[in-house]
Amino acid sequence: MKNKITLTKLREMKKAGDKIACLTAYDASFAALLDEAGIDVLLIGDSLGMVLQGEDNTLKVTVADMLYHTRLVSRAGRRPLIVSDMPFMSYATPAQALGNAARLMSDGGAEVIKIEGGENLLEVVQHLNRHDIPVCGHLGLQPQSVHKYGGYRVQGRQRQAAEQILQDAQRLQDAGIIMLVLECIPADLAANISSALDIPTIGIGAGLDCDGQVLVLYDMLGISARIPSMARNFLEGKASVQDAVRSYVEAVKAASFPAPEHSFK
Ligand code: KIV
Image (cartoon, rainbow, N blue to C red):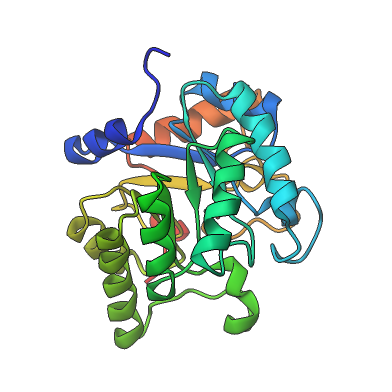
């Protein structure tokens, strides 16, 4: 397809300083709408456990759930890059990760898979890489580790924790990830990571200096029961969902979102 977003294109966008607009999507109707509005990357996030299934966290999401929703999105999202989350405990060993990632790609239509974690994941990333499976990392707040953190908290505020996240980012890049989501970390830490890496960073609650931004679709449409402080309701004052999504794309591209109130120190 003409204008299809590929990993090469995302790297070029990073080099050129063109911001990458990403949103989560879980079904074909929204995938088509977001594609039409100019979204570059569609993420089938395991956040679907919370926003679709009504759970308190993402831990009950299964590979079968991810497969189902990835299929729906990849059927209708043509231009954007399709990234699918691997759910909790589906990538605990390199062999398990390979089997599940292969299903998400060959049965689901994912073009990239995303996994949460730092240096504990290096072997998994290398193994997937050897089998030509593009991997997106996810550092900072990792929702699948919510019980380890004791809640959803900003990460990397202490010096040692910040250094660990930066080091994890560099080691993941060396292991072969092609993109990195940074969630809920101080904006200056995300800026340092983004300039240290060659691969694109996509921030959520990570400040303006990431190479792109992502939000949970239901948060940016004001549907979620509790809208996190890092999100903005783009539907407010707009006549349609289409207008809201276009306004999100424009705000990301113009670097007017996130504002300081959607970021952390
Ligand atoms: O599951 C998800 O939606 C995510 C985003 C919040 C980055 O991982």
